[in-house]
Image (cartoon, rainbow, N blue to C red):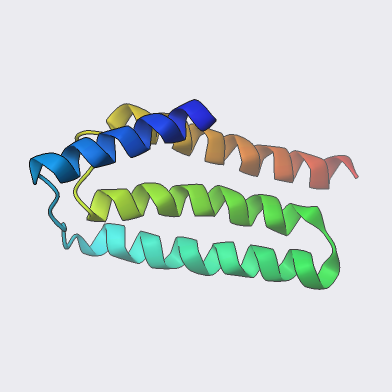
Length: 105
């Protein structure tokens, strides 16, 4: 996971250095970002109040989705396509794990 974030930060720095960063006002990505942030906060709040780890897992997964939406809005979709694939896959796997742990208990 640390390797992915190191690669992502390196790509961001290269884009910033080259002056290729531009904000993309895509309403779908902006809406997805806002909803991901709300779910992240709600997941943390649910964990804090109920001491149930499942909402935290879901919140973290949507936090990862939100990170990719933020980077899309900032114009890094082309440069970080492979990283987005890995980060979103990890997010989906976290949700699957959360649902499985709910079903299992």
